[in-house]
Image 1: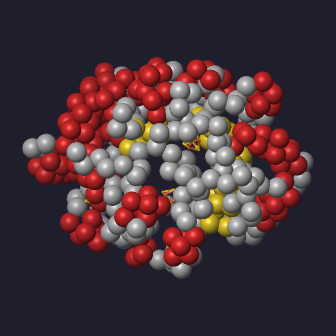
Image 2: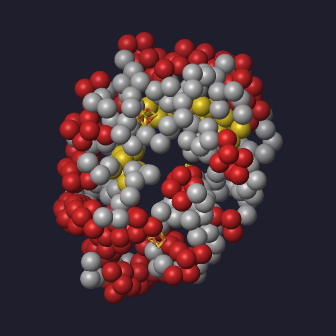
Image 3: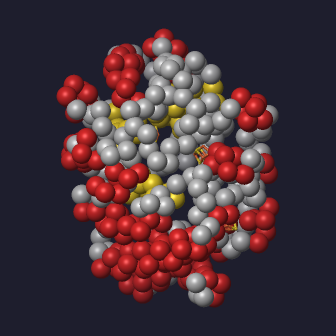
Length: 366
Ligand code: SF4
Ligand code: SF4
Ligand code: SF4
């Protein structure tokens, strides 16, 4: 469990904009040939590892595809590991997995306890190939599980793969993976009622699957913390962008997080981003959602995705509202099953029971 007394900073170093894939939903559309220099990366890392403001720094190598710059990763990490620092740290990266072979694999296996890797997988072969540029057969999936068995995978759901959602999730579970992210791809319109019907059918099957397999941790898609909907409402910012997190571009410039960078937005959009007070939660509240939606406390949004879709950081993507309600219905169904199995009373469970009732009243006509 995270210790709240420990002040943690998330530092993303964008090594390169280049990627060897062209995924269907990739929002990193603005690419250039720049790659970071080792000195620039070392200077940035030094600043944070010696900072008095933090206790722990997670250093994420980001891309594009980070392993296109493997030599730099290797040199930077081995240099950092050879020095003494004030702050604790760990290295992390997310990869498309296709370049992790040969020397890269050897190096990662050697340092698997100091350098954590998450591989992006979108499910079964066919779905993964549709979304991720026919890359399934180029990934040694078992290598990632063997080295980092507790590492979770992130799965993106596209319009083309949503029909196979149940199979894709249960396939990744069958490989042993826990899944922390199951996002509906950003930048697309999910409003069409056909998606609601499909997601309903898929989550209904998934709900039964988790009831039959209680040892498998359910995906967040169907495991929302619905008790939060019954807590007193507070205006909060849901991520640390611009505060406890920063992303550095290959030219050494600092941005609030990896979404708000020149890979996604042009100069004009980013000049507006410069003027935002990231510490003022009011700037991030969608008043319509806050005042009138029961699910607002559990409806995760991304401020970068808001800007991409609506031109404003606080206005959420309403095309996913109906899918959110379906998620709430099955999160409530799963929570109800757990409460029956384990009826021990506590504050969180009493709020969960209230939320189940409310969700059934509000959304039971779906
Ligand atoms: S692997 Fe990542 S960076 Fe590369 S195209 Fe796919 S989503 Fe974009
Ligand atoms: S479900 Fe829709 S209305 Fe509700 S908080 Fe999310 S975006 Fe807003
Ligand atoms: S704005 Fe989006 S991408 Fe950036 S830290 Fe927040 S949730 Fe993550």
